[in-house]
Image (cartoon, rainbow, N blue to C red; front, side):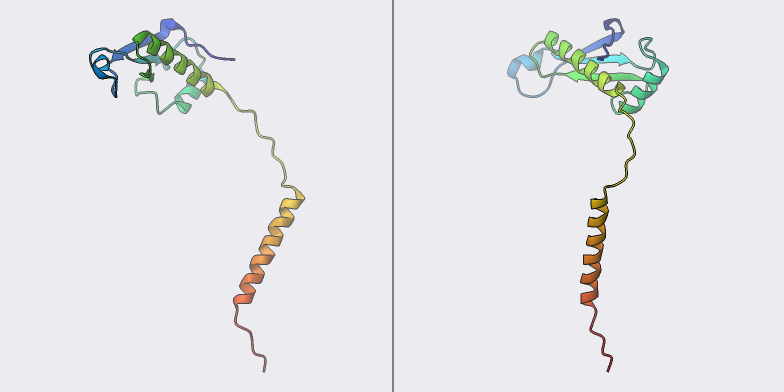
Length: 135
């Protein structure tokens, strides 16, 4: 199930985007940064909050605000929607809990292959030893 951050909890900041683009990019603020206060959001439980804070730590600042930017599009409106989509996808992926791993034993063939490799290695090392003279 996809998690959608309520629009009322999002803040946006528009700045000039860098890179190529000629005069248009130099005079318009098309880069959009979406900001979501994870630490104070009423939309998530405390467990979800802890999970997000841990998994998205590199994108969350010291105040508990998640930052996502979009600057690929030419218009601010398109970048705003792209930032919202990226933020929702990021949060959805972070909230997914992988199923618990079922411990299994290695197959017998893997054990046999391991022992055979050990035997070959031991034989190689044995061949390197100087021949003993029992005269």
